[in-house]
Image (cartoon, rainbow, N blue to C red; front, side, top):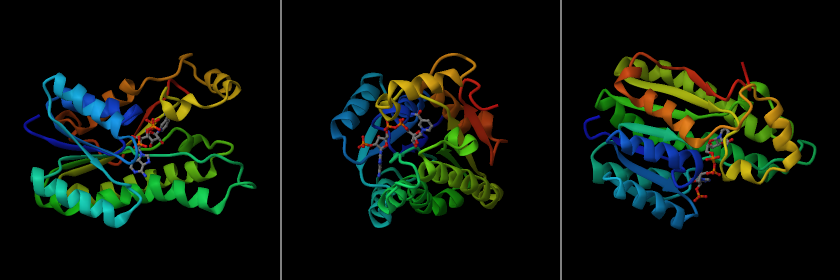
Length: 245
Ligand code: NDP
């Protein structure tokens, strides 16, 4: 990689953190974004720097259109370009639909799906102009399987799959690829709080017999942004231990 600039949304923890570290390992200059956890973001920056890489953190809420445009304008101003955009920031607000509040629907769809739109809007013109770009959207296995209590989350993640496919067709003529990665059950803060019974049930669905690690998702993202993946666009790569086949 020659001086690639990567933006990883939600790069302060979990899967985003692992992606940030992995892309830095390949020589990319990495910009992570976060919304609340400055300490966690600082730790990622320090870890990348101590490994000889370059990293920066920006704080903004991806669901806020104006704040996102402003942050990316600053990033483009400072770094001159964005080569890789990894739309990883995501949240859950689980409840059965019968009990799901309107605000829980809005919040999840706005962060997970509109957040990706907001970030893509901010980089699409410069990527088309430089005739190069890699966009990777982090969706989920549940976009394909469904999941009880996650209608909002599943809808947002299925939406990301549609967005990936439509955008891949739009941007391909200018050398910009758009793909998605669909993790299964990965050990992060997002899954740590789930009740043991649910975890046991999830484990019983995984043929490989274990949960996934953030680094195993990061590896696929690193491949998708690399030159070796230049002929791959509009695809969803599943990383789920066989949970969905
Ligand atoms: P975590 O909860 O561990 O981390 C979420 C990250 O997103 C944090 O860096 C957080 O920042 C950031 N974030 C949350 N809300 C916003 C927002 N509004 N604006 C900007 N950043 C935000 O999640 P995971 O690492 O587990 O998940 C990462 C992605 O992978 C998500 O999209 C998730 O849906 C998806 N995924 C996860 C799976 C899993 O099993 N863990 C399975 C399938 C998909 P801060 O720390 O500041 O809050």
